[in-house]
Image (cartoon, rainbow over all chains, first blue to last red):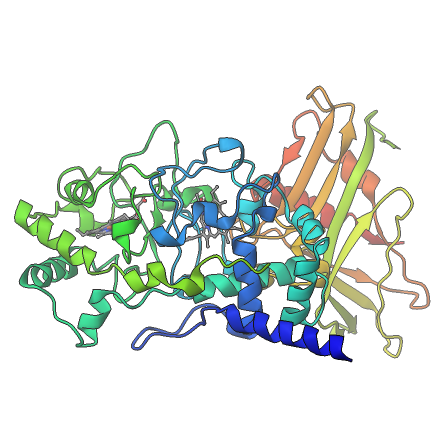
Length: 334
Length: 185
């Protein structure tokens, strides 16, 4: 009898120390696009997803976890790597994007290859130069571990991991990665004010950039050709690869600009290291092509002071609480 | 091992496909539709028959079904059962189910290993490749639906085509060929 009680207390303790982030919709944001009816949120599922996100068991040789390429301290991107690095030090063909506010995103990847967050993890797990494994292998390894039997039991009422449940729990953790507490947000909520420089940058941003990088998510969820030239070594035509429609040639996902301070290098291939290079691109090196949108056909004119002002505004999108929020961080359960 | 009329010999290592959306008709009126109707069939040397369960209380004269998975299901996230991505019928690098998968060897294939792989699927136009067939049922007491693999293999030019791994016009054409090969015995 005594022994049973001790185990019970141990469980309580376990549930108590592990804090998980939760999903919420920030004030004045649109409704999320993710279908929560098909995957109802629970703390236990979020926790399981978080543990999977940090577990290198998802890669063939147990060396690479999701967090290897998506680190919290750089807003869940692979900091300082233009092209992401996977198992055996292999180099991918694209820059790993920052992960945040995924519940509002309609399609995933730079070219939109993935149509639902739930099936997103299959791509890195199977990619030969990312995790180099496959979902069956991963599920087998997970089912062999006692730790996961308990976690699955608590999350889904069944200790056996399936592809469906594993992927749904990873989604749940990803959905909780919400950044909505930058200086910009505080100014919008009238808790703080912009400096005159930031204010001017905000005005210029709304004039030149907002069509695509639309508030409050700083993306309109569409794809566009933003005039960067084709890298002839990578030959990446973006969305064209998926749709095979010539009207999609050179179109890439319009990325959010939240936490842009941390997510360098920039663009799908990480070609720019600094925000000043990005602004110089928009004013001086737009490459004309059939799919260049009308917004970028006339050159954007900005003085060097104005560029500095826009950058000052972009830095107000930094959300330090998000970057350092312990609830997103790796926690050792053992 | 199949010896085809055109002198080609083919061995099959994998043959898997989805049947979905099963409906029964009487006098061209729908009388029964299966709920959550997704069935993955996987053939191997010991098992080449599949069974479908339909209610017997109806009088029906036609059966209708799809080969593959519809586009709405394809954009609805991850699913369990026969649709679980561990079943090997989901593309990983790009979203979408593989509707029909056949792999094996043929002496006409030009690569050194003589191997062919056809993974047919695609949920986006113009390469949406799900196919539908309606078959007449005359004797309700014993319904045998067969996939005529010899016909399927005979219509493929293995010397020209041995590899389809993504949604494309070829995947669509092969899907159209595959659906023609479902028949009532």
